[in-house]
Length: 295
Image 1: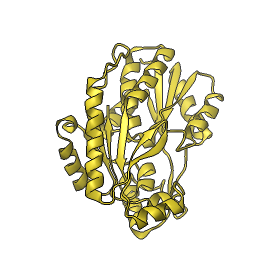
Image 2: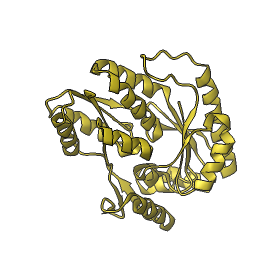
Image 3: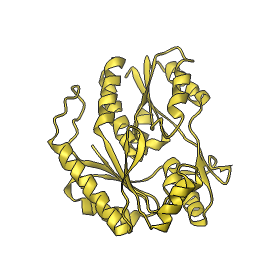
Image 4: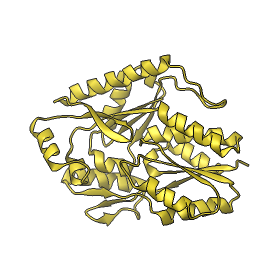
């Protein structure tokens, strides 16, 4: 039996088949990050119903908000894993600059008896999910928590997310961007292309048309892919080294466009997972978002 359990959150966009297999096998737990529309929580809805509700809310211009996990929720998860016999936990979450979940995890870690190492991935979506997947596989064969934490930090540093948002309206409604910036973006028809750096959203390009934005997203993704493929990465035994593959393509209500984007990326994205953004992220991205994750 593995001795180290992994805890993450629903921003990680873990593929359904991996999540089902890992939770059935044991040693992986995920806390859901709540989403509300016009102040009404969506927790009672199914996953498909939540996705549909968020799409409708964006179309109708309703405010979609999110919140982080609470210390109480995380304490409950940690104690459950302790009762199952795990000797240690790595609790790894989306960027602390974008959510209070890491802070909540640190509070919770101090309230339980077994050791819990809290890691701010400084990322989100499958840029976090890819780390979780590789870390879960690595911890199957080690009981060294310190080494596993070092591996997790190396994995976080090796993955990159690039994304395109067709409008800042959803971010403005959710309070994630200043209204003045959203107004300027709308006035000049800006289509931001961005990445995550040191846990913060960084706008790299500001094209004025969607085709230009997707073209730049494609170029930035492939440039990093080529750079990553040439890199020299020294990881612990049993940890797959980065090869510059596009491991995931994300979308929000624009599956056909995402499929075309994946095709445009060519061979590096041949085996990429095509995944909708999880609700806690699509709540802020708005419809038509695209993202690529490179490892």
